[in-house]
Length: 123
Image (cartoon, rainbow, N blue to C red; front, side, top):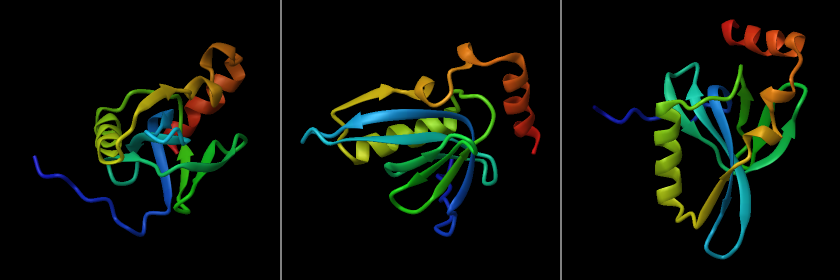
């Protein structure tokens, strides 16, 4: 299967079935990244380091200037996971930890909050 290329002008990305990961480089530098399924292009995406996160809009602003809007509930997109694995291999990641629950812990959501989040998937 050919490897689709993500358009370079994609600065506003809506991710479904997303995860947030904290990585450590061999020199001890840590950063956090999002990965998931790009709802617009149908591709897996992995971000550069997150520099800011807006919890109200569930948007991660990355060092590269991209805005990743996290849609719906966290998940495990196969395409997103493939993009993440490629990114880790290309960047010689020493360690990684899933920190998704620090951004959205579904165990702590009320039914109203859960309905609000899941309704964004259809937008």
